[in-house]
Each structure stands twice: as structure tokens, then as C-alpha cells.
Image 1 (tube, rainbow over the protein chains, first blue to last red):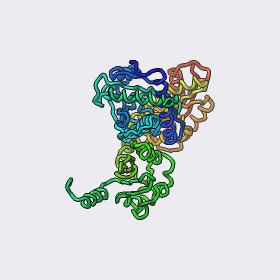
Image 2 (image 1 turned 180 degrees about the horizontal axis):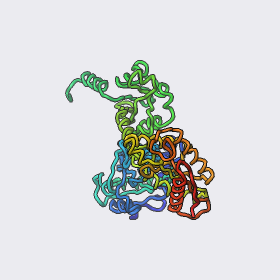
Image 3 (image 1 turned 180 degrees about the vertical axis):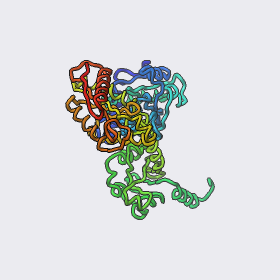
Image 4 (image 1 turned 60 degrees about the horizontal axis):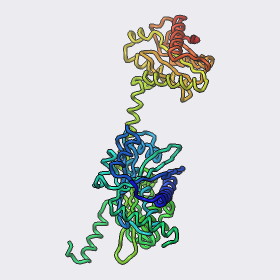
Length: 208
Length: 322
């Protein structure tokens, strides 16, 4: 699915790397240890394809943990941070430093996962909003467990909805963990996003 | 309610704010405290008069750097709400359930939400909501403790409390691999309580159990390193795994263990050669460069134990694996 030009694509990757960089700094401050995050690539896919992308990564990990937030303003989107369930257990335990791991995330650990999602999503969307010079309004994070399709579908979106997938590399205590942030965009939101990127590039090139 | 006069509405909202069972603080755009509810007054010990109109970070300097400050900034500058979980933020506010808790410096466990609020005719404010999650935190602590007990029980002998046979089998495999990888010797002691069946028949099973418990405790006390593992191998048989221990060191340790049981002076009227409970110990060592398997080590320790029994009991013997 071709949505953006190479230039627009690179601009978005750069913006998201600034965002996750801020999130990583905030998380380092919490755990008092180096946390590194980067966005090596992004892709635009339809919802079905997005679910497949997540499942193919690790066919055994059927369950995905997701943290979602809604944003509204210059463009509207539902943003979801997603990790395979075992990876989210790993992240939370590395962050919380719990010595006795249980099979599933406990209530308190789910909340910690929500906070991690909250930090990452707010940083990504916040950077985007600042660069677009528009303010967005955000909701509080919600925690989900299920198949990738269930989590993506929870937004009530049609299967042909466009999903902007950010591949996220997460490095903590020598553990490398890969996850995704999905921005679920309907057609008008996609149009708004393209418009904003166009404006940003024009400004950056001094044509505005 | 929709048609009620503004003054009534205001008083109603104030009533609600002071009745809700959570902390509510509102900051204006300049981060000054403009609302402080009864819950906050009760658990912080600070009255409205002390904090209203004050700069939030002047009141709480410890929060000026870190997640609370970041979340307030996110709300006021970016219009984004934040969640501060109890697990990642250990009780940021100095809130205490009682005077006694305050004395112990035992803060209420907190889950915090910081959200932007739009105020007509003014710049954006933010609301800090604090919930007491102490009960949930205590419940999870209990859950973890029970999981820990459950896990250790599967690997412990219920009578003596030391490791069981299952633990022994797992540990010896692990230590054997480690010894080979690190090029270190590995020793094994096989211990048997002498004439235990006659002891049981003579004194009864309760005394027999007591004897096992006391002997196990005394022998375990001789071991000083955390890597040494003593397990109940069978009825009155014990096994001790000694990583990075050569034959001479293992023999010395075996002798100390034998003496520790003698020192208990548990009377044994049916003993063939002593008036008290004693043990026989078989010692075997795999040398650092040996290529033998675990079975060879266990076999050698078994043969050594047989030699010690045959040689008159209450003694140690060693056999080199071949």
C-alpha cells in the first residue's frame, strides 16, 4: 500500500524517533537505567495485514498485549502499543524488577504496562502534534489482551481501515524486545495526516 | 439539577468533591494549587489554607523532577492525560493512613492520574487524582509470597525441610554441566544413618522422624557455601552435592559431617558398635578433566558408602570413579 512519498516517509520516521527518544529518556529516569528505543521503519497496511504482521513475527505467541489511547484534533486516531504477551511480561518485569514472576500480568503490572504505553504513545503523538503545530486531545490508556485482530478490531474499525505501523526496538538491560505502535486511521484521518506532513515538509524546505 | 441555580450547583459540586474517596488537586496554568479536597487534607495533613494559591512544586519540592512533573507538563502544555502506576512510581506523595503510619514513614500506596481540564475563560488547568491502592498491593504481595512457598515446596522434603530427590536430580545435572564447562572438580557425598530400621522398630516412627530431622539439621549446618546442596535422597539416605570441591576437601567435609551427627548424642540401643546414632558416608569426586557422566559419580559414591558400611560404620570412605 503506497501512501507517502519517500520524503514524507523519512520525515515521519524522524519525527517518531524523536518521540520514542523522549519516551526512552522518561523510562530511563523511572528505572534508573539506560533504556533505548528506536523506530527503524514504518509501514501503512490495512487492518488484516497489520494483524498478520504481528502474528507472523512469532506464530506461537497468539496472545498480544495492547495499550490503547484515543487522540482527537488535527487528525483523529486510535494509537495502540502492542507486544506479544511474553514480551510484555518481560518488559514489565525488567521495569518493575519483580523477583517472583507469575504466569500473567497482575493488576498492578497491567497498570505499569498502561503507564509504559501512556509514556510511549503520548511522546510519539505529542512530537507529531508539536511538529504539525496543532494540539490534540488524548484519552487515558486502556489495557487489552487478545489476538492482534481482536485488539485492532476493538476500535470498531472496518477491515479496510488503514493502519500506520511503527516498528519499535526496545533495549533494556541488554534485552532486546520488538514491538509495534499501530495508529488506526480512517480515510479522513489519513487525509488529515498526509496534509499535515505535506505542510511540515513545505515549512522545513522554506516553501510555506 | 439542570435547572438549579448556579449557587446551588456550586455547593453541590463542592459537596461531591469533599465526599469522594480519592485525592483531588487542581493546578492552574501557572502550576498553582487552586483546589485541594478533603481527602487530601485528611491524608496529607495539609489544610486548604496552607496550600491554596501556592506553587505546587514549592509545596512538594521532591516532585519537581521526575514523572509527576513530566505528567503535569504533558497535561498543561500538550493536553495529554498521564497515568502513574503504583509499580513504577513508589508513592510519590507523602500521604499516610494514620498518625502511626506517618511515624513509621509508611506511605499510602498510590495510583495517580493527571489530566488536563478545560476551564471557560481561563487557560488550561490540570487535575491530579490520587487513589489508594494499598489493599490491592498487599493482596498481590500475598499472592507472590504464596507462589514462592508453592514453588519451594515442590522441591523440598516435607519432613526435614531440606531439598528433596527431585531437587537433587535437577541440581546434580546442572552442577555437572557447570563443572565441565568451567573445568572444575565436582564431589558427591552419599550418607546413610546406621542401623536406622532397628532404631525405628525400637523407638517408634515418631522418634525415627525426630532423629531424621535432627541429623539433617546438624549435617546441613556444616555446609557453609550457598552452592552446596544437601538433599534427602531416600528414606534415611542423604546426598550432598559439592561444586568446585576436590577429593581432599570433600573428605575433610565428610569427616566434619560425620562428627556433627556423633555430637548430637542421640541414644541408639540397637547399634552394633556405638551407643548412639551415627552415619556412614561415601565420598566420590569427578576430576576437572574427567569425561564421566553423572551416573558414574553417583555409582562411585554408592560404592564408597558400601565400603564405609562394610568397614564397620560411623566412618567415611572414598572411591575414585572409573
